[in-house]
Image 1 (cartoon, one colour):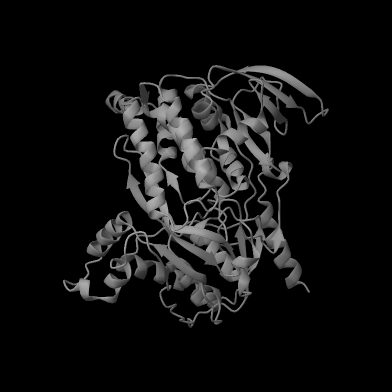
Image 2 (cartoon, rainbow, N blue to C red):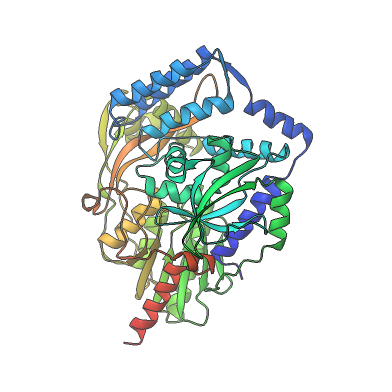
Length: 512
């Protein structure tokens, strides 16, 4: 069967075997040309200024998290560091921290695309990289596994420094390359997205590594110099890697590609809906398909008398609010709302994107006479207006679920997935279990994409201010009703602590 942990292993294998695998020489030459394309100082300055201007034009409150003076002083400091010419890698190393400094998780750029291309380049040229997989526990890094078998450093050992730089300093620096409102989800992402990528891109660490670590066997600190691992080392290590993961669910019964899987917990009458993305292309065909599959899930739950349902959104970084509305039709007959009223800032960039969207949707030729046109296109650029959410379609389905609902959340739960979790908690629809969400309860969303004129860096900027249900009660992320933090041994033993806790809780409640 395919558990989420198995999927993660498959993805990691693909990461090593496919993403890193040398492609055709022509493609590699193309990637190399892209990565090391050179821009003049004037071009780089122009794009730095364009970042600041676009954020000011589009964002409802561009300096909500960081004062304007600090942003502009930082931008000027970057411009003063520029040499006569700069390649794309150097440009991203300098400029991404400026974008992150705004503090809004929805102000982003295509950093990961460039970083991945750079890692491919390193592997193609046999650069040696950090030879350990890392796990995080209470913000600290521990060895999960080593690419080499004959090293003194072992799983569960805590890493203290790399190349004489304290690991806390390394983490703080790497966090400057991930957008978000707090460091908690950033640290989780750095470890789960392969620590070696950040060490290679941000620090340009290659060849060998001097590591200080605390051994879990005797709690003493040691120092070791280890060789870096090349592509073939990763491939050979993966061939021998046989992860031991506990299996909690049966084979998926109903699936929507790249969106959700539904299965049953092994040997128990508990439904498990892993809704790992709300990102959908909302055309009528897709909507009808998704609605049909979701309805089939809840019909099965009702027909078989299933009284407990787990909805897992720990890997869900958001997408369409449509998914929330669809699920709520089956989970409750209560009247609920999205939260506080949204405020939208109007800009030339925003109107251009909305115009393209409405053309794609095939609006009628007299569209300019409609209420939608007046709402989205008539207001002056720079103005901020309250935008009423679309009327919620309260449709209590015949197959409405009348049992207990448990929603699993974590550091990778963002955006509209947080909205869903907030509504579930605020209106008493479900019990939330896991960890604080990475996405915040009050913030900004509805991003507008922009391509910078010189370097063609792709950025996106929030255009709306939003507040989730019960958002006044939370400074940053949504905290679950029951917090479950996995122990290091559980992670190494392949135990899903939050899911196991939820299953045990259901068993306990069922026996009372």
